[in-house]
Image (cartoon, rainbow, N blue to C red; front, side, top):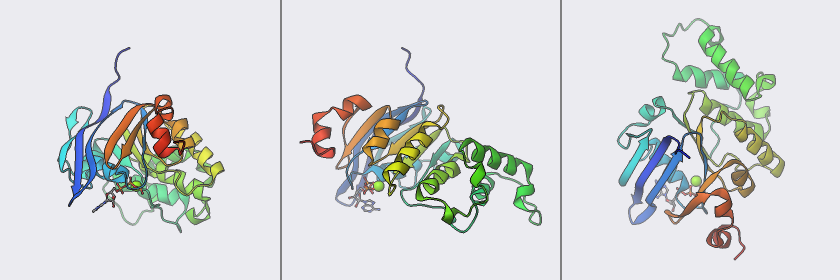
Length: 250
Ligand SMILES: Nc1ncnc2c1ncn2[C@@H]1O[C@H](COP(=O)(O)OP(=O)(O)OP(=O)(O)O)[C@@H](O)[C@H]1O
Ligand SMILES: [Mg+2]
């Protein structure tokens, strides 16, 4: 079988905070359209790894490549322009604005348009069409006029992903999308993630093992900043070290 195109590649990525090796020599490949989970206990370096991939933090050493291009020294906005998008561990929506206005702001914020300030935003056909397309595809059209604070917690976390999709990402980084969700909502989140465009390559940090095994085909396990192991999801699920450390079956 021919190997798929590589969307994202990390080569010996390292981040040192003083004496702490938060991310230590991590090498990882995300194929085109692949869904890879990042598993690891609190403080393992998962969020720091996302900061390094997105350019929020500079690398101590190593390389980040996107579609073969070394982006290690690129600012975040250049990586976004090349097709990288992320969501955050902590929610980042405008609670008193409607679902639609939240999406409009995300879409409009990305478009370099000649602004005509006295016209309402929704009168810009390009912005409105993109907003409508995002809301419809994500199953949020019926909720478009609802204030975000009145959505369920699970819907809010899904909407954050819709906002990240506004930039038409090729590589999507999700930091604990089901954090704080009840079991039923986590299940809906897993279904939502599986409904995303299969061409998007996704790296997903998750503590909820049901979600990660449902969504991810491959998993990389971080432990004290180091890559403990990686491989197909089934292999990771049955790895005795992983079971001992993360599934409490020691
Ligand atoms: N800016 C920083 N300066 C110093 N140390 C940091 C900084 N950011 C993170 N750390 C440390 O690096 C380690 C990894 O943190 P990180 O947030 O990446 O973990 P995580 O795997 O995302 O954990 P969690 O599951 O709790 O979200 C932790 O020990 C943390 O305290
Ligand atoms: Mg984290």
